[in-house]
Image (cartoon, rainbow, N blue to C red; front, side, top):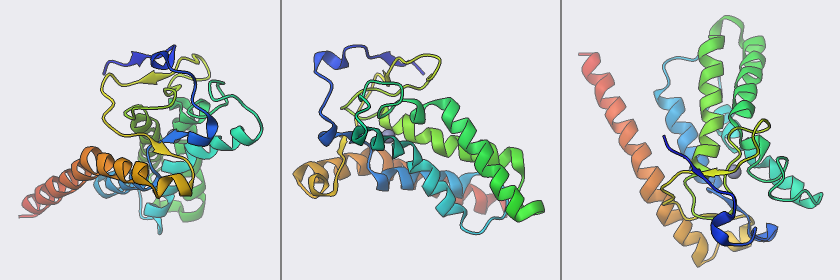
Length: 200
Ligand SMILES: [Zn+2]
């Protein structure tokens, strides 16, 4: 898929950290739950939905950098290295190893690693569909360039509870419902239907 290189942030200044930028936590969780529901047997692990939800929001742990003065546009800034594909793979493999250690023969390590890597990567992919902030450093740390998809229909979400419960928050949820929740529900419905017809 074509990615748009974003060097100047559409001519705008780098936004202030207090108005920072992500798809909302709920929506990352919905994508994680959808992938969990459709992924073919990574293993029988109790709380797999919770694990998937956790890795799907983990990349935004980078907002802590704002408190330490790390600039947004730094590779260690928001949407930097923790939003990269390499980070997703590392989190997938490490988390699968921990689950395997705890659940032994009930975890298929390759399938589990791939599943968790994709759930983690889904975070950056969603962020790259939002219409604000800086793009995502998919190829960090090797390439610090920030990317958006050519099509960015998702209203960017504010960071912070107060801003979220505002008209901005409502606009975010409406756009996420339209562009993420409904497609996820459709994927689930189709998968369920196919599963039923497979079973007779
Ligand atoms: Zn993010």
